[in-house]
Image 1 (cartoon, helix red, strand yellow):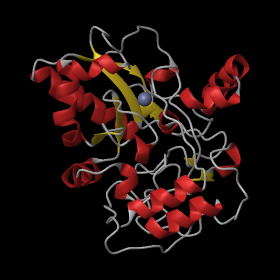
Image 2 (image 1 turned 90 degrees about the horizontal axis):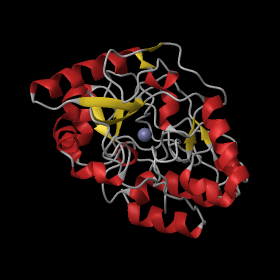
Image 3 (image 1 turned 45 degrees about the vertical axis):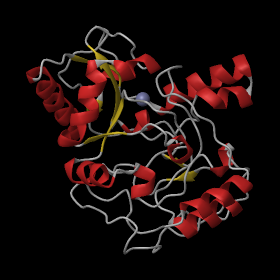
Image 4 (image 1 turned 135 degrees about the horizontal axis):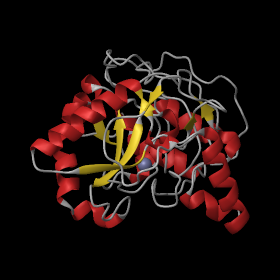
Length: 292
Ligand SMILES: [Zn+2]
């Protein structure tokens, strides 16, 4: 697929995008957008005109078991967001809403947003340590992801690595409050650089979690990358159905800088396929790069 071309067109279209850490300011950064799938070409035109037309089939929203085959075969077949909006690049209006928010493999990023007020129906409290003791909603994850997280923490423990959750689920309302406050404080343009529009934080899916060592050292900050916990996560998360969602050097595609602490559950089939290819989730689904 031609990322280069897509990138150029997108950039020209002014698809801005800022990086924003997910943990840092409480909000995974934000952005714009929504639904999985625009293939290379489709993506390009989508970004350029702000109207996503095609959606390549491997719909990231497929079921957990099914492994969508990336680009190769399937090109745009799709069902994409239909309205040819006249969106302002990067603005809230540019967001595409994902078709299957409940899918374990749903792609949520600065371009693909969850439906407004979306709330997963199967949130539970994973039985793992967190860096805080209160029973807050940010401990929650969707059932399947929570079970996988428990197995992952147990696996780490066997290897002598003690992990702790920092922040998992975040509701649409919470994200909105966070974002609105940042806008009040710093203005829209600035806020968008470090916080996410409501609906575009992966934490709202209930499938993502920020993890640190049990001591909470460097939690959700850059120095975490040098810790033994980060190294263990980097080597083992895919075995448990998770991916390091924002890999190093891929910010132009994911819309986020390297976040070694942000894990996203996608199921073992997809996590292993993504790892085997050494690609980002966006590339795996042939979606248009977020940042350029
Ligand atoms: Zn995060």
